[in-house]
Image (cartoon, rainbow, N blue to C red; front, side, top):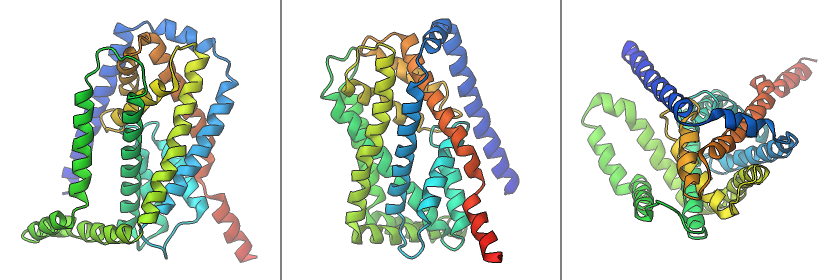
Length: 327
């Protein structure tokens, strides 16, 4: 079983590596990356002090949203842990599958700290991510109606994806559907042992969220500043590059870009992020090279935040407390 699991991981990593290499090859082959380098070198790097500061505030707010959605009032992590693990998730996002691969690391750290709350730690991260993706998609849809004319875009396809996404969430939260799945799993011992506990904990968590709707509402409210700060960062970048884009056009492009790069089809979202921005910003007559430069700026910002997060791999606060207790 372990060998099969390892082989699946190897196959998945190989496929993602192939996508990464293909995307990078396409970028080098089709676009003028020398022009991208010239645009990047001409930047005022003071702008990254502002963008990194905004990013850290955004990550702190993300930690608060995660705390809000934790389905156990008696087993919360400390506020420091929520922030620290969110920073580390950002760090590991640089080289894990998709742009949200760091969530796996964040979950692992939470599980390690809450040893007897393993499933609920996983569910808290999952629900936090679902709330984040739904809210950013809503931002993208709303911004779409506030933009100017878009070239070559079929609105019906985006609306279809939105309806499908909402339908999936409705099914996932329907107790009748979950009861049917639980009965189906009970017929097979392997499936029951593998998924049964997850389904039971998910149902229990739904009861918790149903009884604490204010917390769910609060988590969606927190999404407003979290996403707006992300959009503001890219809007500042676009203005520094001299792009003639409105704030709503940036909101639309970045929201859809995040949804695309959330898919685990590349390593760190590299390549997929750039190609998606080329497509999305091309609808507003932005050149491919400028779209790539904007993506590179976002990646540089992420690298700087990741470097700041590196010391958080070691919980010095915990060690200090342990040293004081021994004294």
